[in-house]
Amino acid sequence: MARKYLVAAWDTGNWSEVSAELSPEQIEEVIGRYIAWTEGLRSKGRLIASHKLRDGEGRVVRGNGAKMRVMDGPHAESKEVLGGFWLIEAESYDEALKLVADCPHLEHGTLEVREIEETPA
Image 1 (cartoon, helix red, strand yellow):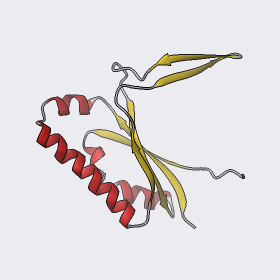
Image 2 (cartoon, one colour):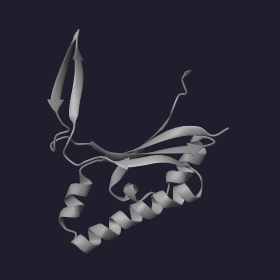
Image 3 (tube, helix red, strand yellow):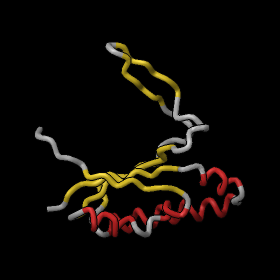
């Protein structure tokens, strides 16, 4: 039975440096490689969902006893920023790792692969 895995794409700061030196055409080529890779997962029947997160926007919510603290974030000075994710199906961690081995994100960032624990409804 296939299991679900979250593949989180973390920007470790390298993309900001790399993209600053790329032309708009080169950036479009990089985006095209992400789209093609994602479509490859879809054609294998392994993609459940994927989304890129909006750059530079978000909120960080922390619990403070019974109160909730909300801050703008993530911040540009953060060393790692979550940039997007894929939700995939695979038979095992080994298969999930094989599926992500050729992801273009690995050229400038980190992928975190986590199995989803199914909880009763």
